[in-house]
Length: 191
Image (tube, rainbow, N blue to C red; front, side):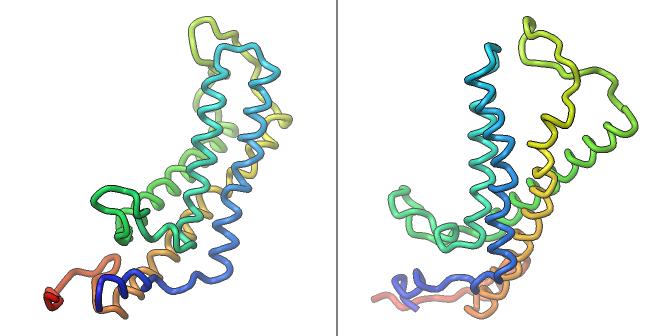
């Protein structure tokens, strides 16, 4: 198989549920990001840069989930030096997605358990010494963050499906997939 032919080979098409789950991730993050950005225009706090940064970071990470179900997430762009046009290795992608997903689950579980059992008694702490103490947020704030409870499980599900598809594609093409070891070296003829 020549280099140009290998550019057209990809993992199997994702199932419909994985596509829906990948698109649900940015939709889960969007309410909290928009709410934080709305505070930038109404609040005179010194943390405006933090609100913008956190909203952009969370939406950027959420949008990366779409790369697990689309072809553009499987290849490095051609303009990237040295690695442009090459296939993105599945193992680090799956590992990063699973670590991120499980970290989000752990944060949500801690937050929910802390709300119930009060492990940490202090109130909300802002950034900076001159930040005023705020009362604990109620439902008027949590309603924007409630959809984010699904962020971690959705990322885990999509990453597991991506791992399955990458392993199947690797096995069908005679190359190692995620979790497989290379047992032989394939040589292509010099032409």
